[in-house]
Image 1 (cartoon, rainbow, N blue to C red):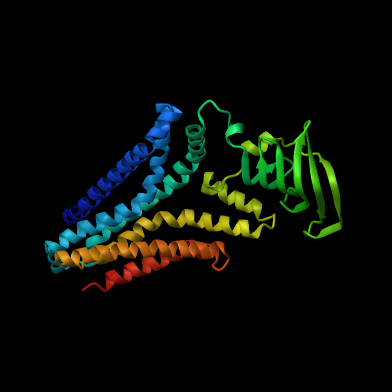
Image 2: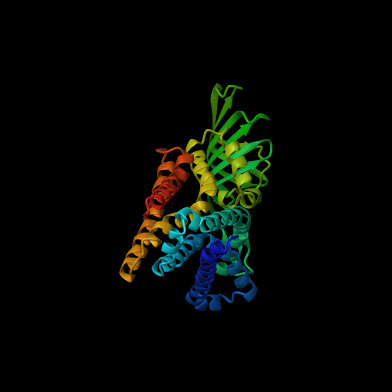
Length: 366
């Protein structure tokens, strides 16, 4: 690496790490102070608190890393520009891309690291984090069945290739409401659909109420007349504990697990659920690269700083651009989940616009 490259990259890395440390430190201090009295009353053990904060640090890192990238880029290149060092570099024949390329590569490295943390560390730790939060809220000694009395929007896979969709599961009463069961063959073709208003587990058996059963052929067409029973005993081996312990949470899944989950759901015909999950899946790939996009958007504004007033104005404009970028991302995600935009375009639209805008502004710099 050239001396000039190290000279421009060093302050960016230094300020980025400082910002990350300050943000995480402030987060821990604020959370501790705001809930300290509550934790004392509930007598939460120190080791539970330590686990809670440690598991939250990767989440906070992913959330604050784009802001750290923006601030480090603005400050570093803004200072170089105010000291006329950018002019000296440009006078020696260096283009803006040559001056900032290492910072751009740094943003790409941070994006890849955030992708790894988001997919591997956070996805695997969320279930543990929920469990710790429940212990903090309800006490370590209480059973999970008492703490978590109702589970909404539950979905899980059972044996015999069954897919369960449950609107509401009352744990204390062993009662299911809004039941849909899809049975598939070995090729994931739907063979039977069971819909019931309510199901109660008693004496080792499930009794379904207002139950309708549909049978399907290999082409997915309904065969025979649907059968209706006001009450029906169901030969389902899954017990209430299976629904409670094996429920699917997409935010707890890694990307391969989420892809497999979507593939299985694709045979169910739940189009809105599949669309939302596809948006979430593509967002897993796109969102880490916010760090790179933010750097590309911050570079041109930092290089137009001349005087202090201009610098403050440019920082304000850059923060505004970052805010608009997040608004655009939220709107595009909402349009994707609403079915207006394709899932892949919905998850990447803000990145495409941000990348195009950043490259355009850099190229138009004098």
